[in-house]
Image 1 (tube, helix red, strand yellow):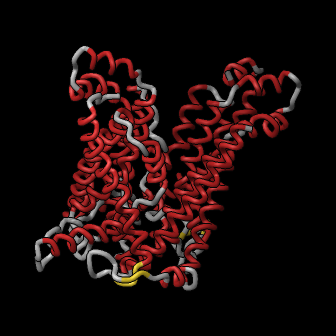
Image 2: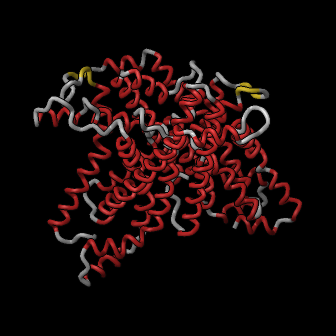
Length: 289
Length: 265
């Protein structure tokens, strides 16, 4: 309606109205696009622009290692989020239990809390002197902590799965809330078992939400920093952590800028994928972005 | 209802409820428990104490709490003004420039926070803008990182408010600024409150960019929590984490109550 009103307005007024967008755009340009441009410039070396540093960094084993870890962790965590999110949403939406509403609200709060809190909690639960290990050592009278996965890639994947599952559940629960329950009732009265209903009715219906939520998860897990920093495992270095350690610990800004450029390009690519997924499947936006 | 038979339904709950509790209940529980524990060498802490809380409100942890709250409020307010302005201004544009600029305002949410931190560090350590080492650079980082979320929230709200209210006001001869102040912004209020509370929560938990640029006299809570846990003071870290979580939730709940009130009025 608003566009229609503007379209009727005479042309000169339309131009003036368009100018109102200039102040916020200027703020964004100075505070965001200008700094972003400078790291692109810095990644091309200090003197005349050249791709030499770029090539050096991209070939270094440190970078390749970081890229490998980033991708493996992001894909595994996203897969974990999709499975866990689908199962939990199914139960909350279709096998409602007392307190299911509360659970839904809890999901909303988890989204708002900082990610590294989970890692801190994991130290107390799965750490070498944590709840799980102490219990196992008591029960089976062991001398050494039997569970030791936290300070590895698996610890990061588990933490990220925990933190980002709500991003799958939110669009899923919204989809399920508008889902016509009669479809399930008809199917089950025709003799379909729950598993078949899930596979043939609910899974196709939730595909848009899963794709939108999943691609958002992929974007967020690629860029996750707090969890990896808090776990602090020496051999689990992802791109954001590599940028941090190059810039802050080694003062090697050129290398940090090169990796930052790669990381930004990677996540912009994933972001376009996310926007495309939403546009293509017509799913709702998975909450925040 | 997906599962009709009672035993199967109970089986589904028996699987899902513990799963939910282990995944989300347990982490929250242990952090709170740790914040009260004096010693934790066994399965459960051997004694409970308030000493970590006393410390949190006396030492430099208190400065961190203050810095975080101030950063959250200022950055969210700035992002709210900027995001609302952008969302309102974009309504008046044609389809194509609108879509392009819309993407522009969303891009900061797609860029990793560590890279934003590095970019600000590089850009504001050289003329013409020398801000490195000031609290201002932290505010800018938080503003940038949350601006896309406020913009997105306000845009979504604008799409949902009834267009005819504004048109009626216009046809009754209300000038644009009067219309904005008396019709559009009041209708938008619940979404503005929601946008503010979301950005405040995000700012309170921001770590990636802050850790790249924070000056020694403006340490935010997440940075402080990391420093403590890195040093091995995990109980103090857990205490600050609890305070951070509670402070965020209190603000979120308070604002959401305010926003439902504004919605029903």
